[in-house]
Length: 518
Image (cartoon, rainbow, N blue to C red; front, top):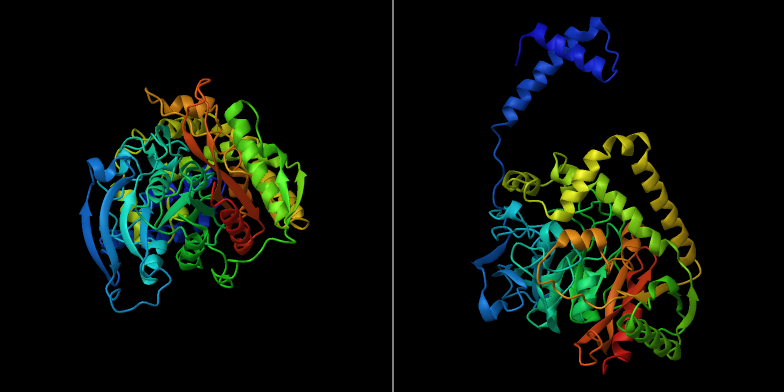
């Protein structure tokens, strides 16, 4: 470090720049302390980056699948990972279950790209906390699944690995960003999957692919070891082929993580995953959100009608139904757009730690990112550029603070409704799965976004309420007036109060039973 006189001059310059008002008489003492800290930093530079933390597990590192094994491009990597004593212990919640992991969640020793060129050569040294819990509960991880470029899209064609094709119509998107999870489930290649949801990223692909996906209460499932997109609204959650398995997986991965900055407190209580199953819905009060239904064309009308028909079936089973207006559903997209200007630049900048938790994954990830800004997806480049160009206006006008206050007000209004109703019901996505464009232009989708795929989902990321999607019907799409379009699934979304996952499972289980023959 420089000599003491130079240090004193530099401290004085910092004091003046940031109006610290450090008295001149104190500068020498400041210089002494800063010299000590400088020596400490020099020592830390020689500390090791961290070792592979594979835990008590067996790992067949595996391979990148091709051709028939990956004909929808759902897998980025196939592997076999389970605990050492899986063969002799059968008491875990996930014993005998195969599990897929989204390619934005770290599995030690297994390549992880996050769908981005920035991470093409990244091999994490540690397991994400949710991966640890899957293995502890006896699950067998069979691969990493395709996700969108840095999880920044609700479509399914921005990954560096190429588009992930819908299992019901290969010309259509499978939804994103947990696209590969949903496709692998729909093709019955795996029992369960762990995904992430920053605005719709579990629920949209689950809806488009006819499976079950839950965005849990914010903080119920730890995010440490996971690549985050918008940390204040990011959730990790379970996906499965049926409601029961989704509940079992949630029970396995939920709970406080001392290394995560976003999990709920140590008094978190998980209800038994079996407590809601087989329970009737008679007496449950449901609010059907009117803003969630659209009638822009015949396909939208079919989706809305299918969901309303399901609600009517539930009413006959004893569900108490009332249609209400929740204007926050529409406003939420504006709020989450502002968050993308204030949070995402921190992710690609130098402030990773608050979002990645206290683990060596943070350092591994930071060291592995290649030409980060150059390799950002187009949508992220728009957000990053806007954040820099509008930075002064954002700060002077307290835009972030106003956005946070608006989010809190929205959460307060939604909570007030939950004092009257047990659940909300609405279509998961009011539009059919869009066609995969011949010429891929994610920037066009980001700016114009005619389908607004997250319109019915992102409010509950902002408020933190649990929201599940389950298939309720199939509809025959009209393709440019042609009645012989694809037969596609329709997802219905159920939302409930904080930590009331058992309520959304209870209603979803009844829907699954009533619509089993659809």
